Length: 65
Image (cartoon, rainbow, N blue to C red; front, side, top):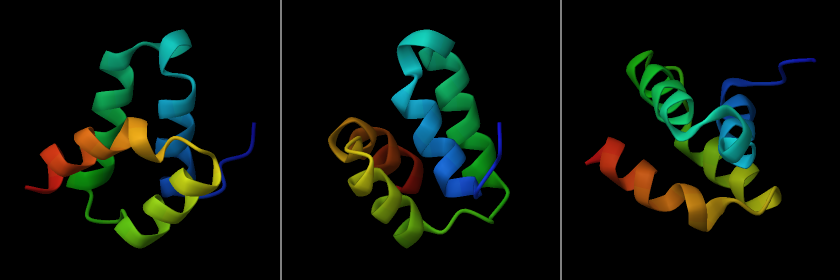
């Protein structure tokens, strides 16, 4: 499986959250945000494109604030 970008990887984690588990998804988001390499504009664009924006929104708001 190819890794396209950090934002795409986080969004894919949210897409497959029922398969991999919510704890893994939240850890991926936490690590991506903590590394300071996550671009929120790109994350929002990819999430909207893959239709998981509403699912991700509460978690993103919690991490950013």
